[in-house]
Image (cartoon, rainbow, N blue to C red):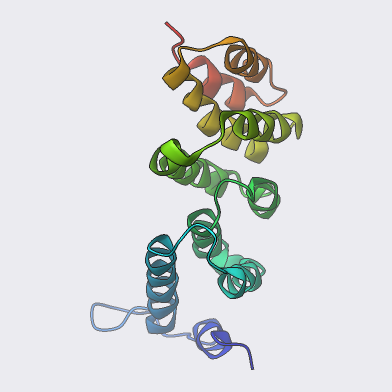
Amino acid sequence: MRPGTRLVDEDAYDDRPGGPAADRPARRRIDLLARGAAVRSGGRPAGADRNALVEAARWLADRPTFTGTATELLVALGRLDNLDEIADTVTCRPGLAVGVADLVDARRQALRDRLDPTVLIATVGRSAGRGDLAGGLLAVALVRHGAGFGWPGPWRDLLLDLRRHPDLDVREQAFGIDMS
Protein backbone atom coordinates (compact mmCIF):
# COMPACT_ATOMS: atom_id res chain seq x y z
CA MET A 1 0.00 0.00 0.00
CA ARG A 2 1.34 3.42 -0.99
CA PRO A 3 1.97 5.79 1.94
CA GLY A 4 -0.86 8.29 2.12
CA THR A 5 -3.39 5.96 0.52
CA ARG A 6 -5.09 5.38 3.85
CA LEU A 7 -5.43 9.12 4.49
CA VAL A 8 -6.79 9.79 0.99
CA ASP A 9 -9.28 6.94 1.37
CA GLU A 10 -10.25 8.17 4.82
CA ASP A 11 -10.95 11.63 3.42
CA ALA A 12 -12.91 10.24 0.48
CA TYR A 13 -15.27 8.40 2.80
CA ASP A 14 -15.56 11.19 5.38
CA ASP A 15 -19.22 12.16 5.09
CA ARG A 16 -19.41 14.11 8.32
CA PRO A 17 -20.16 17.78 7.84
CA GLY A 18 -17.13 18.81 9.88
CA GLY A 19 -17.02 21.48 12.47
CA PRO A 20 -14.74 23.30 14.88
CA ALA A 21 -13.58 20.12 16.61
CA ALA A 22 -12.63 18.11 13.52
CA ASP A 23 -13.04 19.28 9.95
CA ARG A 24 -11.70 16.67 7.53
CA PRO A 25 -8.82 15.47 9.74
CA ALA A 26 -7.34 13.19 7.07
CA ARG A 27 -7.24 16.07 4.58
CA ARG A 28 -5.59 18.36 7.13
CA ARG A 29 -2.99 15.67 7.83
CA ILE A 30 -2.20 15.29 4.12
CA ASP A 31 -1.79 19.06 3.74
CA LEU A 32 0.48 19.15 6.79
CA LEU A 33 2.60 16.27 5.50
CA ALA A 34 2.96 17.92 2.08
CA ARG A 35 3.99 21.25 3.61
CA GLY A 36 6.47 19.47 5.87
CA ALA A 37 7.95 17.57 2.94
CA ALA A 38 8.38 20.84 1.03
CA VAL A 39 10.13 22.51 3.97
CA ARG A 40 12.38 19.51 4.58
CA SER A 41 13.24 19.30 0.90
CA GLY A 42 14.08 23.00 0.80
CA GLY A 43 16.76 22.48 3.43
CA ARG A 44 18.50 19.77 1.43
CA PRO A 45 21.24 20.37 -1.16
CA ALA A 46 20.08 21.16 -4.70
CA GLY A 47 21.24 17.78 -5.99
CA ALA A 48 19.51 15.75 -3.27
CA ASP A 49 17.30 12.90 -4.44
CA ARG A 50 13.66 14.04 -4.31
CA ASN A 51 12.27 11.27 -6.54
CA ALA A 52 10.17 9.60 -3.84
CA LEU A 53 8.54 12.92 -2.92
CA VAL A 54 7.94 13.81 -6.56
CA GLU A 55 6.31 10.43 -7.20
CA ALA A 56 4.11 10.88 -4.12
CA ALA A 57 3.08 14.35 -5.34
CA ARG A 58 2.27 12.97 -8.80
CA TRP A 59 0.16 10.24 -7.27
CA LEU A 60 -1.67 12.80 -5.14
CA ALA A 61 -2.19 15.06 -8.19
CA ASP A 62 -4.25 12.28 -9.76
CA ARG A 63 -6.80 12.69 -6.95
CA PRO A 64 -8.89 15.70 -8.07
CA THR A 65 -9.58 16.99 -4.57
CA PHE A 66 -5.84 17.00 -3.78
CA THR A 67 -4.47 18.50 -7.00
CA GLY A 68 -3.83 21.85 -5.31
CA THR A 69 -1.82 20.27 -2.51
CA ALA A 70 0.09 18.15 -5.01
CA THR A 71 0.98 21.01 -7.35
CA GLU A 72 2.09 23.14 -4.41
CA LEU A 73 4.46 20.32 -3.46
CA LEU A 74 5.67 19.88 -7.05
CA VAL A 75 6.51 23.58 -7.27
CA ALA A 76 8.38 23.43 -3.96
CA LEU A 77 10.32 20.31 -4.97
CA GLY A 78 11.33 21.52 -8.43
CA ARG A 79 13.90 23.98 -9.57
CA LEU A 80 11.52 25.45 -12.16
CA ASP A 81 12.46 22.52 -14.37
CA ASN A 82 9.11 20.74 -14.02
CA LEU A 83 6.75 23.46 -15.23
CA ASP A 84 5.42 21.51 -18.22
CA GLU A 85 4.25 18.79 -15.85
CA ILE A 86 2.74 21.34 -13.49
CA ALA A 87 0.96 23.15 -16.34
CA ASP A 88 -0.40 19.82 -17.59
CA THR A 89 -1.70 19.08 -14.10
CA VAL A 90 -3.66 22.35 -13.81
CA THR A 91 -4.55 22.96 -17.46
CA CYS A 92 -8.27 22.24 -16.91
CA ARG A 93 -8.34 24.05 -13.57
CA PRO A 94 -8.08 27.81 -14.29
CA GLY A 95 -8.49 28.91 -10.68
CA LEU A 96 -5.78 26.54 -9.58
CA ALA A 97 -3.56 27.67 -12.47
CA VAL A 98 -3.70 31.25 -11.16
CA GLY A 99 -2.67 30.14 -7.67
CA VAL A 100 0.11 27.93 -9.01
CA ALA A 101 1.47 30.85 -11.06
CA ASP A 102 1.76 32.83 -7.82
CA LEU A 103 3.64 29.92 -6.23
CA VAL A 104 5.97 29.74 -9.24
CA ASP A 105 6.63 33.48 -8.98
CA ALA A 106 7.53 33.08 -5.30
CA ARG A 107 9.74 30.09 -6.15
CA ARG A 108 11.47 32.12 -8.88
CA GLN A 109 12.21 34.85 -6.36
CA ALA A 110 13.53 32.35 -3.81
CA LEU A 111 15.83 30.76 -6.41
CA ARG A 112 16.82 33.97 -8.20
CA ASP A 113 20.54 33.74 -7.37
CA ARG A 114 20.71 30.14 -8.57
CA LEU A 115 18.83 30.51 -11.87
CA ASP A 116 20.64 30.29 -15.17
CA PRO A 117 19.11 33.07 -17.30
CA THR A 118 19.63 31.13 -20.53
CA VAL A 119 17.80 28.09 -19.18
CA LEU A 120 15.06 30.29 -17.74
CA ILE A 121 14.56 32.09 -21.07
CA ALA A 122 14.07 28.70 -22.77
CA THR A 123 11.64 27.64 -20.03
CA VAL A 124 9.59 30.83 -20.46
CA GLY A 125 9.47 30.33 -24.22
CA ARG A 126 8.39 26.70 -23.86
CA SER A 127 5.69 27.52 -21.30
CA ALA A 128 4.35 30.42 -23.35
CA GLY A 129 4.47 28.35 -26.53
CA ARG A 130 1.95 25.89 -25.12
CA GLY A 131 -0.71 28.47 -25.94
CA ASP A 132 -2.88 27.61 -22.95
CA LEU A 133 -3.78 29.54 -19.82
CA ALA A 134 -1.72 27.39 -17.43
CA GLY A 135 1.50 27.55 -19.44
CA GLY A 136 0.99 31.22 -20.20
CA LEU A 137 0.50 32.17 -16.55
CA LEU A 138 3.61 30.24 -15.55
CA ALA A 139 5.54 32.01 -18.31
CA VAL A 140 4.34 35.40 -17.04
CA ALA A 141 5.47 34.49 -13.53
CA LEU A 142 8.94 33.65 -14.86
CA VAL A 143 9.35 36.48 -17.35
CA ARG A 144 9.33 38.94 -14.43
CA HIS A 145 12.94 37.80 -13.90
CA GLY A 146 13.86 39.99 -16.90
CA ALA A 147 13.44 43.10 -14.75
CA GLY A 148 16.59 42.13 -12.85
CA PHE A 149 18.58 42.46 -16.06
CA GLY A 150 16.99 45.71 -17.27
CA TRP A 151 14.85 43.93 -19.88
CA PRO A 152 17.53 42.98 -22.43
CA GLY A 153 16.39 41.74 -25.84
CA PRO A 154 15.44 38.13 -25.13
CA TRP A 155 13.47 39.00 -21.98
CA ARG A 156 11.73 41.95 -23.63
CA ASP A 157 10.84 39.80 -26.64
CA LEU A 158 9.35 37.11 -24.40
CA LEU A 159 7.22 39.66 -22.58
CA LEU A 160 6.05 41.18 -25.85
CA ASP A 161 5.16 37.68 -27.10
CA LEU A 162 3.16 37.06 -23.92
CA ARG A 163 1.27 40.29 -24.61
CA ARG A 164 0.12 38.60 -27.85
CA HIS A 165 -0.64 35.24 -26.22
CA PRO A 166 -3.80 33.44 -27.43
CA ASP A 167 -5.32 33.53 -23.94
CA LEU A 168 -6.73 36.92 -22.97
CA ASP A 169 -6.01 36.44 -19.26
CA VAL A 170 -2.35 35.74 -20.01
CA ARG A 171 -2.17 38.85 -22.18
CA GLU A 172 -3.70 40.95 -19.42
CA GLN A 173 -1.17 39.63 -16.88
CA ALA A 174 1.67 40.36 -19.30
CA PHE A 175 0.45 43.91 -19.87
CA GLY A 176 0.53 44.36 -16.10
CA ILE A 177 4.33 44.03 -16.11
CA ASP A 178 6.09 47.38 -16.43
CA MET A 179 9.31 47.38 -18.45
CA SER A 180 10.18 51.00 -17.69
